[in-house]
Image (cartoon, rainbow, N blue to C red; front, side, top):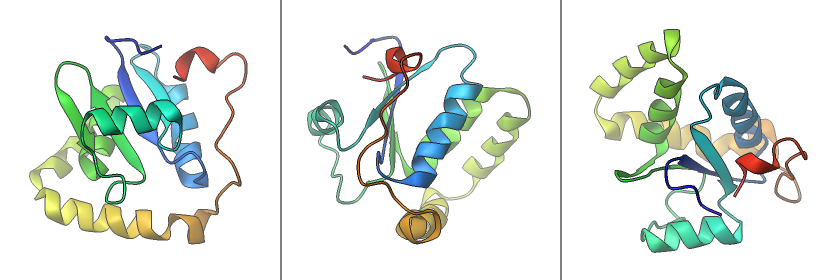
Length: 135
């Protein structure tokens, strides 16, 4: 079930870095802004297809903002951090950099994420108390 008022984070469900990042977002999401789905899941594939997102070019994180559009790569990461509030808003200073430059750094990390952080054999299965946050 997709909740129209929630922002949806699509992530690489087998990536350890991505899973750890999602767990961190869940802890920081005090206002219950986000819902989550693995890119590899049926709903993840449906949401990317509806928006004509080429997952061969964006395979680590996508933020779907209801009524606005979607964000990928460094734009998605910065938009998510901005929602945490507080000192996290300082990261918006990076939006002053050209997106191409930010995405070079993002792509370098994304390209090496399995080598540096490892990967799981299957997508993360949320605990019973977190199931309501996952689509």
